[in-house]
Image 1: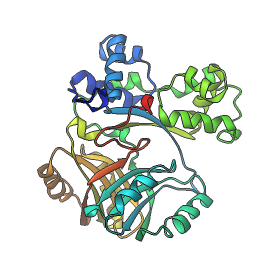
Image 2: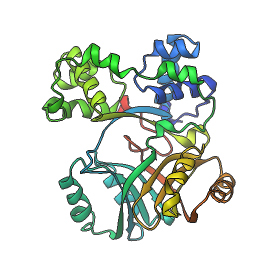
Image 3: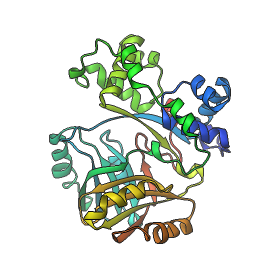
Length: 346
């Protein structure tokens, strides 16, 4: 039997779930702050988080934001039979590709592409992907309006924080700016060599200490703190919380390609974003103009969601349901089966 803790069965209780919710409020909140809000001890919260991380349930990642020229894209890629797995694993290694999933009986890969510039977008969507030998067809779909932007907003796994607890954990960006970011050249953010090293370390572990970030970049801890906080405050980087949904009791995932009357798109998108099942919702280009990534406990729950909740909304003209066969990559990590890899073991 394996002794690797990331492959052992883990029992998750109310405190574990509330710690995950706390991280969704602020991915870098200190264990002492989380403990105070949840009515626990700092040692208990730290121990529980390490256990969740090592078991592959949750991790915090820092993601570079795209500029408006680069835009965010979802790409549906039809592949030759038996080539989807190798293609999905290959494309998952790219830093500008996330949320890689296999659907449609294993012949389609859907991924999120986040080019930083117009030039990167054109190279990816007009040159590299279309010329890949295994690709039969592809449909790039522009993300025009996110309604649910990150998995940090998904909370169907229960035991949510109260409004007061969530408010107490919400990061105070203005205080952080006054404390640490004074003297940082905002115009040069993202262009310094140390920024690339900083982002590499934060993609691996969004909760890395400032001492660890200093070691990775050659800066002092104080300089690393100022640089990272400036990146957060400027919107160049945001924190996301990767969650292994299956380990929280939601093994059924599906991508819903929804066709909505244009005049109803804003209303329907906002309503779908409020549903517990919705992990990501966005208005997209294409015939199906609304996308929803949903998580359910079983197929019956997915059926009820599509037929009753979606079916009751105004303006919906059609829904294509693409069950996810395998999640290959989430926001920041290539999956290890149903688990997230422990960032400290990578």
